Image (tube, rainbow, N blue to C red; front, side, top):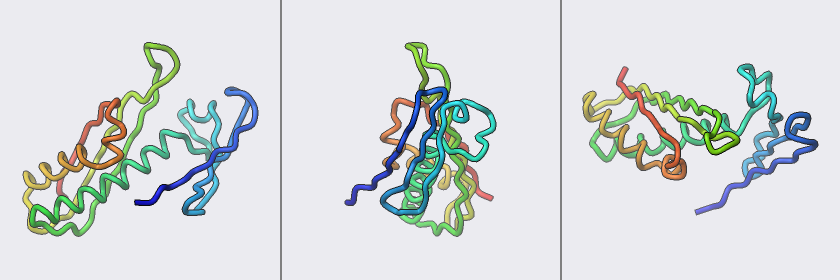
Amino acid sequence: MPTRTARTAWNGGLQDGSGQVELSSSGRGTFDVSFPKRAADDADGTTSPEELIAAAHSSCFAMQLSALIAEAGGTPQSLEVTADVSLGPDPAGGFRLTGITLTVRGEVDGLDAAGFAEAAQAAKAGCPVSKALTGVEISLDASLE
């Protein structure tokens, strides 16, 4: 399996500095990052590690869920997955990820609501990004449309 790469160039200190994150493997973009905007409610055009983790988690979960739906005898027509990743203070000092909420709405042929919920729980546990984030509480809201 391949290795994927991203690169960050940072200038300055935490509060007055800023950087750019480059998606090196795909070459699909370079995105601004800054700690003050990371900690603000309005990202104002910048991304953050939490948003990038949310992107990775939602896409990984969608892939895993589509595979598990097929294994259970269903056919996924569409899956809409949102990952909300929260940053907060760490009681030990600094910051930490305080939680992740995965929300999925699906249109699936051949599975009822219980079968879909079971596949979604298995995808939450089995996708590689979920496995990498085992130190963070991950909640799931899954339903058919």
